[in-house]
Length: 139
Image 1: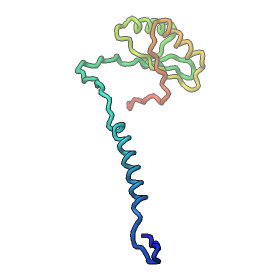
Image 2: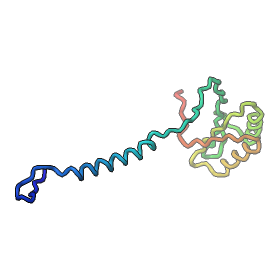
Image 3: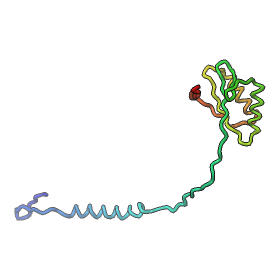
Image 4: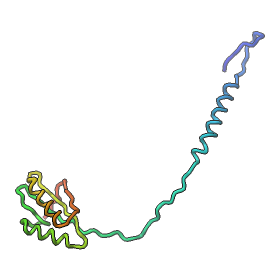
């Protein structure tokens, strides 16, 4: 509260209300302008829930490449001829499972490239490169 002197030399104990009213009018105008923008909404059509059953994917096939270049198909060592045959059989299936490729860190690039090329020639396109350690059997 400000004390002002009037023309008679007496002290005035009144608050000047003009600046407060100006501020309130400006705030009122700002709120009046922004309120319609805040309440503006857009009508959208959200998708409905469907109850269609999810397709069951075939279990992936594990292909391991060891450090010495041995190819292991689902736990059984195979050579290039057997690998080609198994890849062709897999490509002929209707569900076409994915190949999970586990390559040892020390395996040669040529071994991995040969398996990838054989899978591509057989017509398999779903190949997963697994970079984590393969789970060990407790037996």
